[in-house]
Amino acid sequence: MNMNALIPEPALTSTRGATLRLRDLVKRYGPGPAAVDKIDLDVAANEFVVLVGPSGCGKSTTLRLIAGLEEASEGTIEIAGEKVNDLGAAARDVAMVFQNYALYPHMNVAQNIGFGLRRRGASRADAKKAVAEAGEILELSDLMHRLPGDLSGGQKQRVAMGRAIVRQPRLFLFDEPLSNLDARLRLTMRTEIKRLHARVPTTTIYVTHDQTEAMTMADRVVVMNAGRIEQIGTPMEIYDAPVSRFVAGFIGAPAMTFADGVLDDHGLTLATGAHLPCAVQHRGPVTLGLRPEALTLGDTGLPATLDMLEPLGAETLALWQTKALGPVWVRMAPDPALRPGASTHLLPDMTRAHLFDAATGRRVN
Image (tube, rainbow, N blue to C red):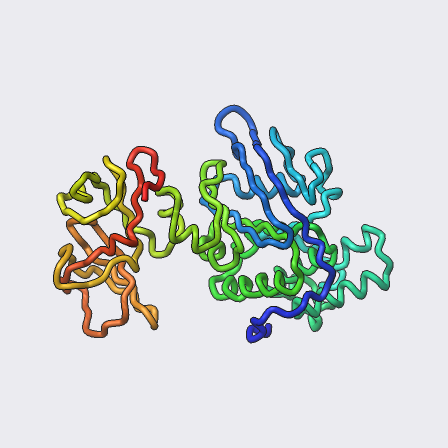
């Protein structure tokens, strides 16, 4: 695969991306909490939106509701302004790519890609042209006569995407398509999917539990928790201004450091007794959140002892043990002289701190 072709190329097929609108969408499977609970979401034509959250949060169920593979208990689903609740999956004009590829093992690559076209009545000539174009886009042209059993995981996933491309659907739906691939191949396929979206713009809803996929691929991220939407925003909006402790803890690697404390007229007093200046109007119990880049080493501040180092080349992640904050990850420049057991002080940048109400978990600053 040509990984040097990172500059978006002109679209090679017609653009058919549609708007998507979900209102008060609910899915129940029985008594107890709903799997999807009153979701509202608007997606623009050709936008790339990623649904992210822990297992069981309702993201895959939401995708299946959009696809017509599940029936909504309540609420409406509109595609291109048309209510589709009563339409079957085949009538909604969407294409879904699954994590297990769902290829026919007895058909070669070309036959797998073109199978849906022939079933929908496309002529042999039109189907052959569409399959060839998809093969060129996905760099599968030399593999057209191979069977799925002779392909790598990444090649199988590209065949599954080719089958979706040739249909020119109004929506692309991806259900954790990279979860069965190794780390190196996931990185490659993330780039390829974004490159594909640049060449063949189509409204795309992508489900993952991997926050790195969400942050690197999405135009907008939808963070889900317990069947509800916690926050919708661009990747940097989600990272820089999480609306809740849940979002703050789920997004970001290494994870944000949290510490309980109380805000009063004199600043923030942590449960451990440490005091930090804090010009926030909120008063009462809060949870302080600090990302690894919000702390620096200094001669004054919170005493800390180095526990471990993770050198990453251009930067180093250091885990420090502190009495005030507990274990804290700090993102810092490489320092060959630094060794576990070293002592220093950590200075929190309170202008970059996140504060959440201790009772509700909602952001207060």
